[in-house]
Length: 89
Figure: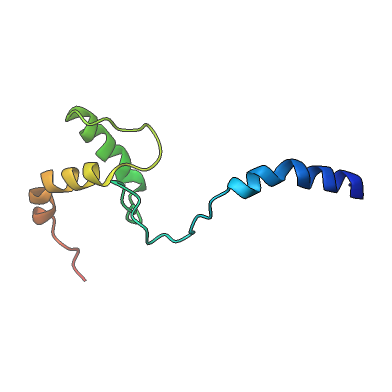
């Protein structure tokens, strides 16, 4: 790019640069109702989505589910988890 074009580009972008707001790249900030998905949710996600749809939750087809949905599913299945025994070692 020529020096003249660099100057024209800088001049054209300057209003946007001046209006820009710095955003922290810190994952510790609260991101609303969503929560960090636990590792290994992959195959279980389909089960949770189906359960949530059957119980009236608005669930995305793909992507992150809200913490509310995952928590509700886990709360509804506490008895199931209590009956599962650990494998013998």
